[in-house]
Amino acid sequence: MTETNWAGNIAFGAGRLVAPSTIDDVQQLFAEASPGSVRPLGTRHSFSPIADTPGTLLSSSGFADANEIRISEDRASVSVPGGIRYGELARALEAEGLALANLASLPHISVAGAIATGTHGSGVANGSLATAVRAIEFVNGSGEIVTLRRGDPEFDGAVVSVGALGFTTRIELDIEPSYDIAQTVYRGLPLDALLESFDETVGLGYSVSLFTTWSDADTIDQLWLKRRVATDRPAPSEILGARPSTVAMHPLPDVDPVHCTEQFGAPGPWLDRLPHFQLEFTPSNGAELQSEYLVPRAVAADALREMHSLAPQIRELLLVNEIREIAADTLWLSGAFETDTVGIHFTWKPLQDAVDALLPRIEERLLPLGARPHWGKRFHADADTLAALYPRFDDFRALAAHHDPRGVLRNDFLRAKLAI
Image 1 (cartoon, rainbow, N blue to C red):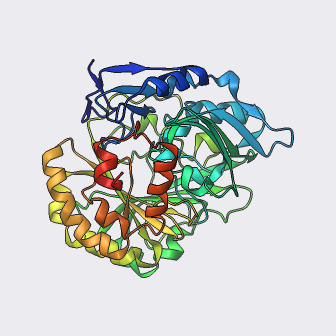
Image 2 (cartoon, rainbow, N blue to C red):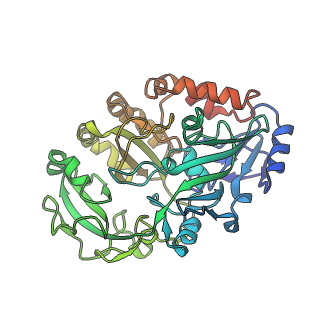
């Protein structure tokens, strides 16, 4: 079997790919599994070997039936199969006049996979996608069906789980009435001015994303401002000297923006503005790699100064840097655990050896500031280093041992990054 992730930089070593469609199927697979022989697989948008195994890849695609989306009677939550993609869920909710609080840049990722790795959108008051979880159902490594709800003792450890506890079958999420977003893109933001007023700038709207290539190390190339039309202030005529773009923009320079969500301040439904890319656009295999570090917001300016000092080395390998905000949460393995954070996200050219050689130099600058790597991206830090960054690290390891005592779900990634 030859299977790869979305970007093609990971060739899975699995002997087979299976897509169970019932809980009984999943339980039977776990009953037959030997230690280290099974890993859950989402929509393959991870760039690390987090899902790799020499045994069986357990695809969530069999748990992706849109007919299984169930809205609660009070219309405050929705229950979905774990493999459903955010784009499909968003359409179903909008048809009912409902919405999620936030979405990631791409709407094509699965709910279970995004939550398990701590994936996020942007906004100073917006938590990661995992913070919307009210309840989670999974089959653990012992084949038992486990349901945990917000407030249960194990819940905060089981949501961002990096696939170490079991196979997620169903998730219940917070929802709210639908709302409109207007998106305006600004160009040419002076870095010094941003660093002087970082919190004020990233707090200008419901969601703010900054993009830079470091080609001009003293300028942030673009600022994408997404406002909730009913509650946020009007888009300013300029931001620290940056003016609204008069042409549609793509986050990457010189790339056709035809598949990007609408700009120029035109209001539209949340699902058509919160992602950077349209729901109808299905990305092909991406000729890119990704890394991300979530830095405490209190030291975000210091972190950006460190990246500025490395700009000559970074820009040789970089396609674009994205800078986003994530509100603090209580999820044990979340990059925003008990800390408001800023994600410094690198989209790299597909030069894996060179990128992997540069990452330790970036981590030397960012990890002492408290930065935590995104579990699904490429990073260098090992378990000893990560343990100091996550106060509930050992608690999670104990939780994994409880739900997978035979180590059915263990792989090289979990051994290297979590020492389990």
